[in-house]
Length: 66
Image (cartoon, rainbow, N blue to C red; front, top):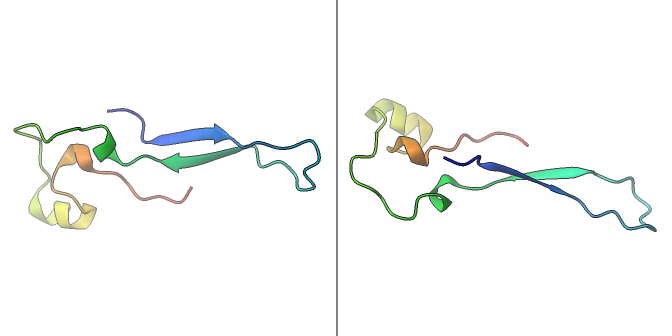
């Protein structure tokens, strides 16, 4: 699976009064990488699936502060 976190450089104009931020990041959901649900996807156990928010392991995306 591709990396879910993407980075980009923030534009800083020559007359911008604020200090430049540099880089920002954003997270791409894993369902953008899987176009259809293939058969026999690996699954989490029911308790773990409820805790993580998805039954299928390839669709899991951790929530984090960025």
